[in-house]
Length: 258
Length: 321
Image (cartoon, rainbow over the protein chains, first blue to last red):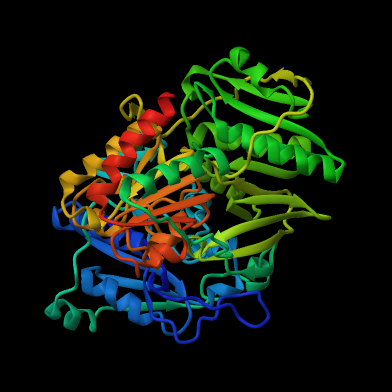
């Protein structure tokens, strides 16, 4: 049984971001890229299943520009067996197009399980894995915090507001992973060395039978802005009791939030 | 030409459904379109009165015990087919945890783009959305040109507003044949009295300044008094002090309460991403140089172990009076 893991590289979450002069995109120059943190959980979960002898192969799938190989190698160094790389700049497309690329790529391998992070922490689009599932007509569950494989079905816990659902999903199926499901491993030095020899299969859109013009989207960014700080920054003085009393008076009488 | 709003329910209509209806009414009015709604789940009767004043012409009700909880196999085809049947130009849903999955699947089946977690929706010769990206470090203004134009609205950022007492006409629909591949085996609810972070009006969060996992008790007591939800910084979650479901930040939850109280939190950019859209931010930290003071409205520089118990006690008195 093969497990596909959908992965995306994103700017490091500690990055200080700048907007390009045309105000329409984020300046990606000089940023450090990492694997989107939720995808690490997806890979870890897949590796655990393979290590338990319930899967034969873990294959990582990504759409990204030249330079994405570094992040792919990180996934391979964690222990994924090989990778499928759709070399295409994702910034030209939106979720619909990216999902069509990933679905076409995943289809070439016919996995029983498809895992992904619950969202990528750059555009926070929060929809590509679910779209892939629909395009491949797979049942799916999102924001999974516990995963258990029982033969031809998986029993998972998925987060909802103020609780969780336990859902039984027949395979083949797709799941998106939430933090807390596991602790992703760090690549060890021997595994980093091994990863250099693992296969990265590259696809162009033409290889997948896709036409870029048909994948370009119906979303147009008209502007980007940094949220205004605009805060009062008022430091209260007095002894602790006085300050607390002042604070409560302000919150109740001026701001009316208590 | 119409706007379709997806009403999320869990036994009763969720607040996020009424927020989405508020946003959808504004769009329908500006665009000069009719507003309709779709409701899937248990019997609607006891809920329909809540839909008063949103300008909804018709609510299409698909009532089925089996669909009391979300099922993509059950819900998605209904909305795909209804949106087509009504010729909907705009479809608005909620960006709750199941709402996002629902909207993503519907968008895929309709073959259209989707903006998730919009914090503002408007009509300007087409649907336009404000959407935070990079967990709110940047806000993107997006024009949604695919048809129907689809967006999900982030819960807790839109005030529910009703106008007049018009009640929608309920159009009961026969349930299409159900082929549910996934089955919900159990529904676990958090303990009674627990306030969900993303829906809370007040959030109190603790950080590394607490020094020890057991000191979260101080924050829990403050939460109980204020009726607040409990949040936490990534450092405390990564250290195993508290469950990840409490994490606020770029790799945790994004919250926008009326009041956010950060206790012993330095205010790393990662954390700010999850709480900067809060209306009022209060910081309590012993380090006057902490970043959190740069983004707060009101700050107390002091020892949290002294300040928080006083705050809890005084708040109790004030709120009781």
